[in-house]
Length: 110
Image (cartoon, rainbow, N blue to C red; front, side, top):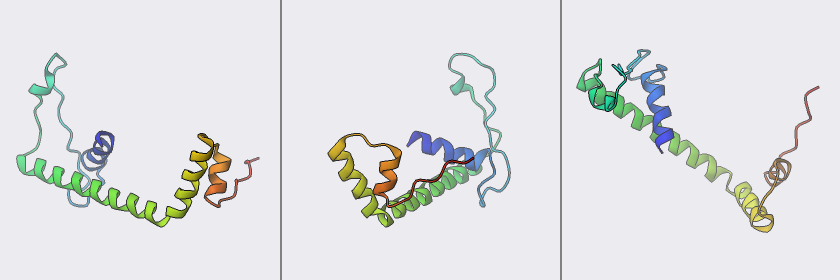
């Protein structure tokens, strides 16, 4: 969850990928590099902006969770095929995964 939260925060604060916040950079000024610097960080934006950022990060995470859940639900049969094959063989290669997913192996690019 930490990695997902870090990416969502970058989407909102650094990459301008939030319709609510707009294409603005909301990055913290790291200040001087010394032990305990996290305690000395100064934000260049208001508490209201901080609350909006947190709300947007939660929204991004929530929407992403729902999308991932829907993809897994829509592909449950294929996932169960992969699960059964893994229980049977313990390890499988990409070609066998594609077979379990009823996909064809793409031809190599020449």
